[in-house]
Image (cartoon, rainbow over all chains, first blue to last red; front, top):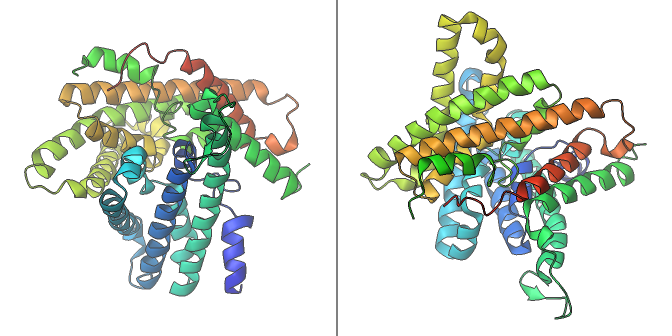
Amino acid sequence: MTRKQIFINSAFTENAVWKQILGICSSLAVTNLMLNSLIMGMGVTFALALSCLTVSLIREYTPRSVRMIAQTLIMAAYVIMVDILLKAFLPQVSKQLGPYVGLIITNCILMGRLEAFASKNPPLDSVIDGIGAGFGYTLVLLLISFVRELFGFGTLFGFRILGSWWTNWSIMVMAPSAFFLLALLIWIVNNKYYKVV
Amino acid sequence: MEISAFLLFWAAIFTSNILLTNFLGMCSYLSVSKEVESSLGLGIAVSFVLVFTTALNWLAYHYLLVPFHIEYLQYIVFIIVIAAFVQLLELLIERFTPALYYSLGIFLPLITVNCAIFGVSLFMVIRNYNFLQSIAYGFGSGLGWLLAILMLAGLRGKLREKMVPAGLRGTGISLIITGIMALAFVGFSGIAPIQ
């Protein structure tokens, strides 16, 4: 596969959320505001790309029996970096994301990509695969949060879009709408992209 | 405000269910919920592990991380505690009760990667729970998760022969069911505070 194909494959064809059903927890929890989704997506992409690079670099020297714990510790190290950076530069967002930043460690997308790709492929390809998977994840987050923030608050990225005549749908801010919207997204993708009938 | 541990226990099951309001533990929730029996097994294992890992992590956080001012290492410490506890539990169950091992054993490795376990430990730190509150919250969350996965498994069993649009089959319809369940649980919100 060329590098472009690797990217397209991990971002769209094998998209972590809608195809592999991984990383659902955070894609539901942080999507009530677009800004939070974007920051979360960037955090995951950052941690994922760098963990892919590290795991790929040491893949020849990691015994198979300890590779899981090695991968987990590598991920944890990068997630701690993301957490400290967020606390320092975006304290407000960090507070809203709460435990979900730390939960990137148990986000199955990371473990999935490390195990399926980075532990078998050269560093540069692994980084591209990681960035692709992170991009696909961010895309899903932004799509869901676009609907939730627009209807729930009448704003996008905090800017008012719908005028004062708009009545906020409080259901969009609450948990159930996240489940419905993700189901809807999976339905649309299955029908239009994978042509399931 | 100090909430009594008893109240927190019920609140963790109903008013802020770990899965239906905090979305934690979704991966194994969606993949294991095909049968009631295995859902029950996994749910019990999760509840059991949650009580102990929450207690251990509380002790680790307040007696190890805080005195040495290394709170930023909490993620690594929590993960190691959870993984080590699950591993130890697996050994003990295999050694002393082989029957239980065969019915519960296959679920144990799944638990290490269940984000509900890790998430409860993080919530415990963020919300400043004391030791008793943490255990109550951990146990309540485990039972809440068990309740949610059992309900989904029961409903999925009923749906098996029904006509579901092709694109929605599997995950899609499970998410819609979960959404409706979450909608029902919204009715409990506000009855008891969690923080």
